[in-house]
Figure (cartoon, rainbow, N blue to C red):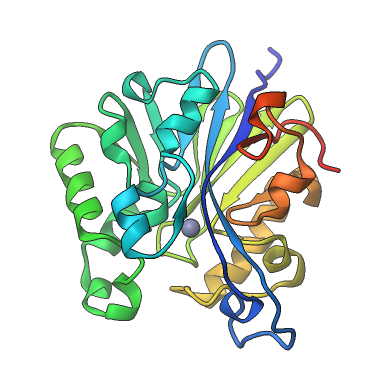
Length: 264
Ligand SMILES: [Zn+2]
């Protein structure tokens, strides 16, 4: 049996201005602008559709001073996906910018690592420094979905469908997972925040918001093992993704790019 392939898209839904010193543990000798993009991802073929992460709401964008460009569900709609009837959402981790619009996906089952739920409801959240990237309403919302039978837990690496696997990496949060997808150009790895920018996994540098530095560094090795080549690793927040990959269609320039074709 030949392995199925999927189309993969990154949809940009928000952005913010920042500087290089904001993005590297220990700072950076070059103090220059380094803006951040915010994405959700779509994985689909004729049989299956998966959404990876659901972004934040406009309310949280205003509180945290992020520039909201479109609700993630609106971005998905531009690619023909109706969030209201989506069946499967993979949650890379529960930071506010990855889980906030879960309410827009009322039919979906949410795929989450055991370790992430334990992390966001356990002793580490006693510390302001570790909980500041989470929203308590998101955590409570996911607990409600759990009691509604809509959370699918995974422990480590797992196969969701032929050609689609998830991989616990940890590091950034205790239960972060990345996604590996079989495409016509080979195995693509959607790192999400296992690597915020290309520079993190390419140079072994660490983003300041980190639970476990060792886990982050081990994670880079794992990304390399999982991906067909370094050009098959897609970081979670890098504006270069929008430059290196082609627009999903001519009317989606600056909104969504295709990741199942080789980057420039
Ligand atoms: Zn993030």
